[in-house]
Image: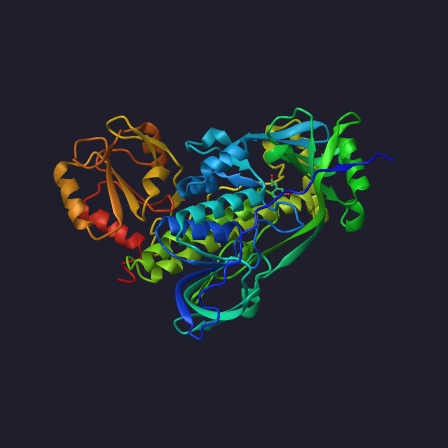
Length: 549
Ligand SMILES: O=C(O)CCc1cccc(O)c1
């Protein structure tokens, strides 16, 4: 029998536990913002707030990144997440370490039945996707948070009790040096899928578990394959079941094999069994070593509301979806970016508490949409009824010969920045604006993310205003967080060169037209013939001032 080699385990960083000042003091200290959970969403939020100059306490029960003894969970980072990381100052580290890709192919048996190129609709500086083990992303975020120096990161700190107060939240915390109590004006639960905070507060998650079973093999081998997402609906080398294949950093391939529903999970993840499967796929001559093998089944859940009084739920604490399309981790990062600027403006007294309600109004429907999209993929991959089996057979058979059927072969619809529905702060709804390369009138280059990376402000892009209009608009918005920019013209405002790509991406471009872009790079309003009054009014609406002056 063939012997299969294992690579040495990853060496992950460990950060020291430092006894906090509250230990040994009877005084209960009140902190404006406490985040619990240093996973991707909690760390992104802490980093976002630090970048905006906001101090927070970040608690985590561990003292490292990743999950001890487990493989990387998230592996694919989508363009919107990468743009957020660019704004936070860690994109270069991610791009240098990770694997950039935009092309995907889906096979049925030996035949390619569908492909896509996500670069086709992109105008961003960031690529459609970078694959990277989740712990590296967490590691870079911790490094950045420590560089920024504003976050009180408390490792080895487990929250044992949470109670909502009339004007805040009470937390009991256990550490290696003893227990203590703090209060928070606002608490962010980023503790993940099994959130103890959610359980303590008695919040229903509406969980459901799939019977579909998979086995991950993270493996290194030398075989020149393109850096593309490959999926098989029914792989000949996996007894006609599904397979996923992605390259991650350090030359490690993530290969997910679909298993029989009633499989023995201990058996299918034994090195000899996983090795034989991989040998079937790679052929007799390819040397490989395992990095990690593990079985998994997926589940989903979705909270009815992501805000409960003073407690906000982000990432997996709020929503979990099946992995197809990489929508889980990416939407947690986007939750953090949505909530970050709102918390910052409220903490700085520039917006009222109502703005925080818009976090739920925007991100809960986004999570609903992600759940719907991933559930469709999951049911295509593991049909649940005779009708679903028939549909899948017909789609796969037709896809070989008929283009219309190819787009129905559903091995996952990759994560995108969700649009937001109309709401009081977004009368027309909102859509994400990509990180467009821009050029100042004097020829210097910039990007949308650079314009958003310092402080917390919206950007107003005004096509060729007059000098009088520009001066009056600056006066009308003087007390509001707005950077007013001109696109073309001679207004005296900081001016960007007029650019067809910018105009068509924003959906405007005639002289006098105006787009309001929020700190999270969402287009909140478009005005065909902007005036100083309509600009100020659109801004106040976007910041929730109208409903909470
Ligand atoms: O390509 C996809 O659809 C997602 C791949 C993925 C994401 C997260 C974990 C994992 O094992 C695979």
